[in-house]
Image (cartoon, rainbow, N blue to C red; front, side, top):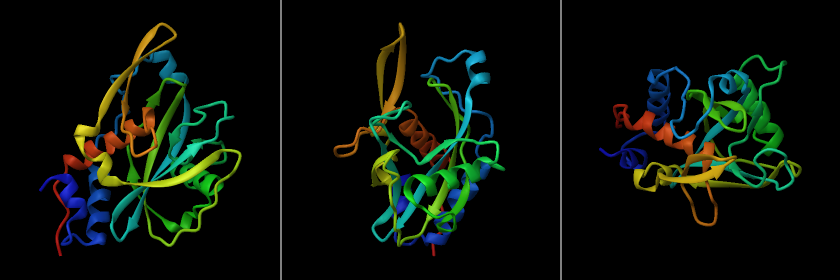
Length: 217
């Protein structure tokens, strides 16, 4: 059964879907994910700032959705871009999961107790000097979210199946500082979802697409 059909199939219980995602993440490679489209030296990778983001999967009656934000225009990093809630790992954070949950509460008011952590994806290196650990979590509505007006301009959701159609995984090119960079772009309605956000979602697709399907009721 194709991955999109697995996600929406009525015979797949939500609990089984969560277990399948969790098992798939646990079985995925643990080595850092060096995106072949991003040219980074070994020195740059070693100097990259550790960060964590929350890939929040929201359980809606019509299907699983991904929670995303649009960053405000005045920020020094990734201004105006579509991103997951998250940020750099602070010294007081015991682990990346704590970072992702803490940042999500600060940025969009998502309480840690509303998130069931299913696992993590591989570290994702981005050319702005960060190495990002994506934390995948299951979120059960109802949600009462409130954006941090300094960092977040908008909070919205996209059906997960939109990102799980490989024909939408478009690779684009841009010249930056004399170097050609290639990145994923997966637009949805009026939102331009690209770069690390799109790349992480493609990585999630690849992990789940290679795993056996979830059990049926």
